Amino acid sequence: MLLPLFSVCLLSSQEQKGEIEVTLTNLKHDKGKIRLMLYNTENDFPNQPQYAFRKIEVNIKNKNCVAVFKDIPFGVYAITAHHDENNNDKIDTNWLGIPKEGFGCSNDATGFLGPPSFNDAKFTFNSELKKISIKIRY
Image (cartoon, rainbow, N blue to C red; front, side, top):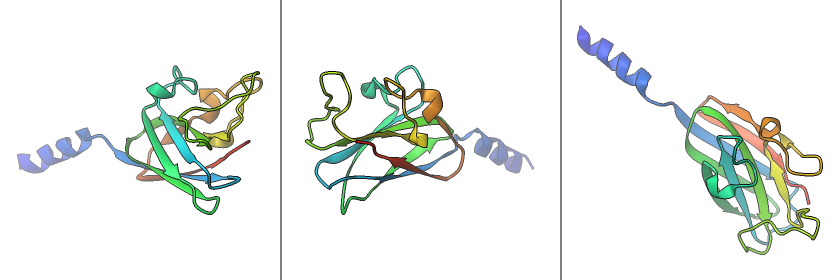
């Protein structure tokens, strides 16, 4: 009789996880790679990619790109995507600090005279699969 109760308690204590599938749109060519960062805190978003919760890099084919973050615990997140056209692992900017390479965020959030806020880009992840689309802006 205690075994079923123990099993229920054990299952409820396990962290729920799933996948976040990101489709990137508006890519202008296949050169370079797309680098995506998944953030779970506003403190580091988006200017501290070294502190992102997860990072992935994907290739572009026929101006299309889909990336999948796997084994992600349910929670609140925001995503940045960067088209690293010259594969130098950074967002190239002009002398004013404006990106010269494509960039986008979850919710297609944009900033005014700077990057978007975590609050504008955040979303709740609470299912086995969450599909998101991000429009890359150049």
